[in-house]
Image (cartoon, rainbow, N blue to C red; front, top):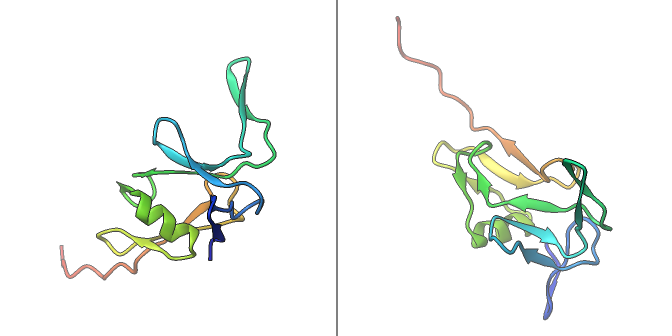
Length: 111
């Protein structure tokens, strides 16, 4: 369960920073996540790397709302129409999420 106090939700990765919404409302991140442009690339230089994008179209086919992101931070899953479920995954440093795919029903098509 995400720790929360009057200042907000604590980062599930570092446990020190507060969760913030990006200025363009495209993702949430730890307040200690910092990115710098070095040459043509953006590099993490902050104390924490935690970030989850609201747009999850490549994983579950849709964009999350703030309530659903809060569910992820609280250890709950978020389902799509097919029954696939997105979870917070602290071990997956690339996305900090994982998908449990719904069981596919066998085809009844005989062709």
